[in-house]
Image 1 (cartoon, rainbow, N blue to C red):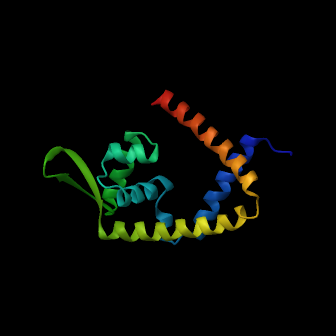
Image 2 (cartoon, rainbow, N blue to C red; image 1 turned 60 degrees about the vertical axis):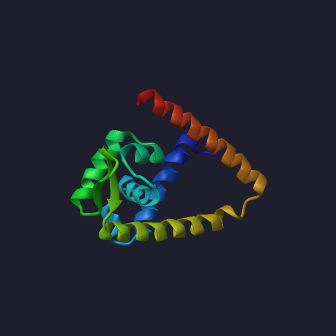
Length: 149
């Protein structure tokens, strides 16, 4: 193999980003990955606040706050406070935010189907080895993130 593993990970990420942009609707291209996944988290979580979204996504609260401000200004996200807690701010999707949420979910499902057709050509043993490696690598990256947060 001519390429080292780190270079292959970079190339994989680059290719996924290119393919995502080519396959996404024009409306989704207006938003970066973090913004789209924050919209998805707000749509999926029961009580989405900065802390819950940050934990769900593995991002810093500052990064979440910065992106949510953009999404509020774009008219995709609203804020609200629970009746029993006036200190915590929660987020909900506007009608336009729900449209983006739905389009992103469709794109995500399509991506999974496309890549599962590739993955299915490999034996369960090979997939298991790759999955074990990636789980370990993600854990390593999580530890590195924790050191810096």
